[in-house]
Length: 476
Image 1 (cartoon, one colour):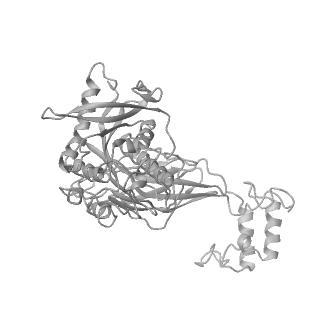
Image 2 (spheres, rainbow, N blue to C red):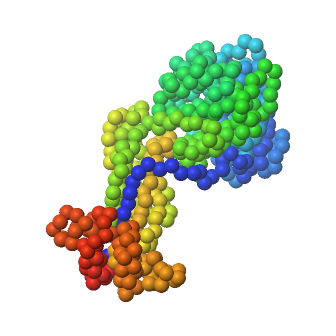
Image 3 (cartoon, rainbow, N blue to C red):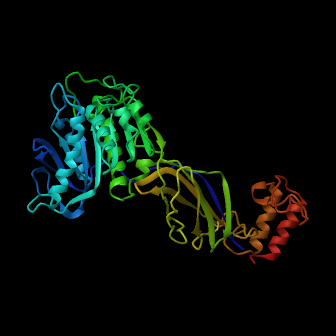
């Protein structure tokens, strides 16, 4: 009989997608006028997926409706300094709008936050306005915020005041007035902070660090070793700093992380979830701190089941996040699929426990084959960081050791699903050679002994007679 072993343990794996590279759309650009509730107006730069690149190019409707990113510029920093990043997001199917308000020497941070929120209303209106370039193409439940420096702090203020926000990812956010640190605790959306260790304008310890620390789960921190404050800009400007990480590398990391995080949380698209919440990054100089809002209570576990059948695995988890939540467990199904879809968990209260159980289909398992099952949790707002894998090993009946007794044959030492004389003579050769890896089967020949069938690192007559019993039984 063939058996399979499923071992569940912690997993680190590499990303298979490339969100740091440009996406499939051409980036279009436009300047729009946004009206505030009091009737006053401000201008904003808009970047969007277009049929061809350029100013006021026609929108590409093929990937719509598109989610919205409202972006806040830094102090005395024109939004044009971020156009490369805006174009990158547009190429991946985002509508980016960057307010041109509060560009003076005495900006009002609270008003700036309100303008960032008002940009959502602009797109909501354009979505239903006949003749609008964006008519019918706005994902009106897909709003997010980002920003740099002062604009990053203002984005935190805006997110704390707006329940429509589904993702927040500021770049080197600065403490503001009113306080972005205080506001961070009220943000309900998934929250990612990007910052550099060599930021001399808004040092991490006084700005981005406290903002991240004050935030609630789900939250994460991406800290770029050698990253600078102005490394988030397309080019340098007066009074800028520099770091040991090149601008090109910092922008590549930034654009990739923005794309992965926003795609995961706004589009219901899991292509980039490993890059958004997985342990790997695009650059070894980017360190990551995750607080996903739930804990998977993982210990080393062994699950057995007959090859050709199913193996059981479970995900014990605790909700460490804000309110009661329901989580969806999902798995990459290659090379062994899920036996059945996994239903969402029932609502789990804060601090509550749930053990999600599912089955892996072993019908395609081959002798000695190893496969991986990767699992992550999802709640109503997106994928979480905790993952684990199962190593699935299909093992032939134990007497099947080789397909040939000839050492020169490619089948030598490879099980072939048949027990015959080749297996017997192969065993004798390995036994005589003292190969405990192959010939050590048992610590005792007495079935009543606890060491029966358990290798003991010693080759003796017990192993010979144990194998002989297996050989006689064959694969039955």
